[in-house]
Amino acid sequence: MTETVPSPYGPTWYAATMVAAPERPPLRHNLDVDACVIGAGLAGLTVAREVARRGWSVAVLEAQQVAAGASGRNAGFVSPGFSERIDAIVDRVGLPRAKELWALSESGAEYVRRTITDAALPDVQLRDGRLAVRRIDDEAALIEHAAMLRVDFGADVEAWPADQVREVLRKTETELKGETMTGAVAVVSPEFFDKLIGHAKVEDAYKFYASTSEPLRNDVRRRFPFAGLVFEEYNATVTLSTGNTETLVPAGEGIAFPLGTLDTFVTYGAPANLIETVNTVGLPIYARQLARQDGSAIEVKTEASILPINKRPRLAVRIFSSN
Ligand SMILES: Cc1cc2nc3c(=O)[nH]c(=O)nc-3n(C[C@H](O)[C@H](O)[C@H](O)COP(=O)(O)OP(=O)(O)OC[C@H]3O[C@@H](n4cnc5c(N)ncnc54)[C@H](O)[C@@H]3O)c2cc1C
Image 1 (tube, protein in one colour):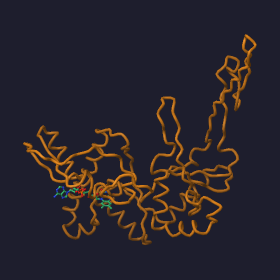
Image 2 (cartoon, protein in one colour; image 1 turned 180 degrees about the horizontal axis):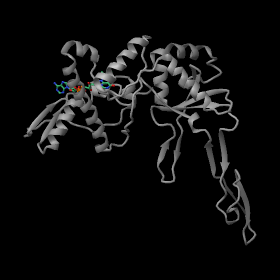
Image 3 (tube, rainbow, N blue to C red; image 1 turned 90 degrees about the vertical axis):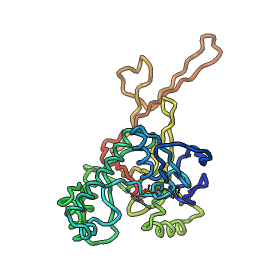
Image 4 (spheres, protein in one colour; image 1 turned 60 degrees about the horizontal axis):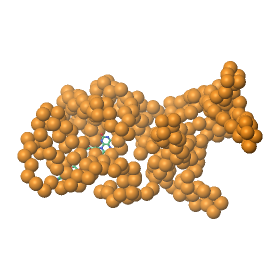
């Protein structure tokens, strides 16, 4: 992990992945505005945005930088609810009032969703759903909690006991549909890899692996087997026909797929851009020699248009980190 700029976040993942912010110098002159908001976190910026949308002038004063506080160092999930558990809120204020508070938090989440869509910010992608893995093995309490969220608060939430998770994994194996596999690999972005090896449940396993698997012979930094999957950092980019560069595995994500299959991943060659190859079966590579008319040289022209195909797309699973 490399820290590029000094930041209030210290040497953390937040600092390593932050984008450059425009310079906002201190306010050194008098300003006559309708409203002044102190603090450029989610709360202050939302207030300022709403004031401005109503046609009033507004200034936001921030002691450090935008999102220097909790807004710039959270888990990035926006879901209804509060940091206090909802059953504790029910105990304290009663169910009818707790329902009102829940509805309020739902409208907050909806506000963020609408804002993301309206603002159409580059690099901000809206994704539905959230997976939370419980650290405590108490199935009964989990199911009861999810039932309460569904029945009392109308939340779209499901509790999956360990058996159900196992069943999903087995189903994935049946997606092989008669294919074979010898293992599975997950190519992941550098951000995903750093989060993986920094995760509390993985950290010790990684330290042990990195110190025992012949560190002088192998590069163990970026390839790490864990829980049946080999995680491999993959940072390749391609240049598109538009001239833009695209990262194959988006930041913070990965893609897992089986190894050793016989007929799932195939590569076809498309016909060359020649009149004689129209309506022919494509070959991996075309090469032809063209003699110059003046006899001075022979030009060699080659062409390859490779089309890699996954015939069982469900076997390739997009993965996201939860930390
Ligand atoms: C680790 C963590 C994970 C979280 N995960 C989630 C999550 O997944 N989902 C979720 O919905 N919420 C999450 N939260 C909560 C969420 O981030 C906060 O509720 C929210 O960001 C609070 O926003 P805020 O604007 O009230 O505060 P802040 O973002 O803290 O903003 C306050 C701002 O005021 C500035 N300030 C303070 N005093 C002054 C002053 N005197 N003059 C000028 N400026 C000042 C600070 O520098 C700061 O920028 C998480 C929080 C943390 C810490």
